[in-house]
Image (cartoon, rainbow, N blue to C red; front, side, top):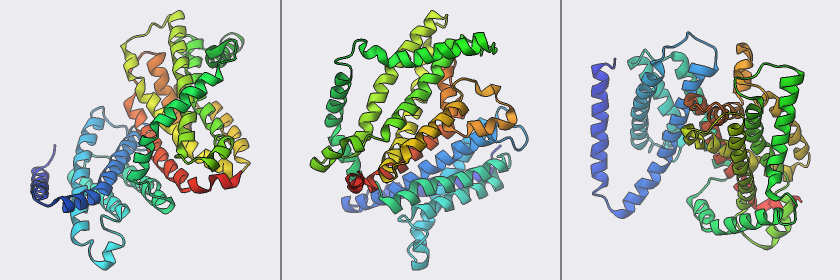
Length: 426
């Protein structure tokens, strides 16, 4: 139950916000643009706080085996109440940064030009208000929240600003060159299968053959008990989802070196090369998923409307892969040992991700070490939709979604910071 004085505090802050918005409507265009420029980093801070809240909820409810078990209603109550407190804290931090942030001593750490300070103040205020007004919210969750907010702030604010801040012009330039990406992608896909006998069938033969061999080895030779569905469908879902990540990350190690002559002669946004490789992987992935649905139908798993949930784990997988590709593509140019190291890490991930096993088969005391890998939860969600025909556990996707978005943003900033010197490392 929310106390009455807490509701009065919310009403007071809403009144202040409405008054501020009323004032905004009467100011000139130049001041309005200046205000929008100041509000932009605050929207970023709010996004980070939401991500930290989602991750803290998943850590408290599912991942970290600490504290007492929580009731079924805790998730929805804590989310709504903590979100409200977080909005209030952000408003307080914004007002403080606007009032006292002009002081020379304070301006270095707390102002609209220093969003990391506003983030830390908002997170601390959220924990303080929640601890005082909402004692039903788990204190462990508040600890996870402030730690995650600080970590995401370093990853999304501090690191990109130290490397090269991503500007609006970067997004505009990339959008203006989208036709180049689409034409290049269409040409690459056509050229890849023009003079082959089996053509596009090569896309599905490798994961299908691997799944058949593993199903034979696990089910017939080792006689391991099945996961409740046919082994072929279970394994194929894991191989396809992990294979998308594996193939694109490994191919990104040579994507810059293979186009270095073109980079030296023609200017275009260099990230198009990464997006081109990702686009090829997406096309292959679509065909593999269609084959998986056909295989499911053959083994007695007919498709149903649960497939509408498929874009959620798929988009998370794409963003996670893209973020890793940005880093790996640059590191491969700077350090020539990176391609071999990536191959070793990918092989380790293959056997520690739930490709050939289910996460519930892992002992509970070791489950956190497997689940801390974002790929684990994405593969499980993908398999739930396409094999088990059930909605994915949305709480289990909070952490992978937040990590994927943060990794993609920071990876893009890192890639743009090294864009001008890529051709010098060949």
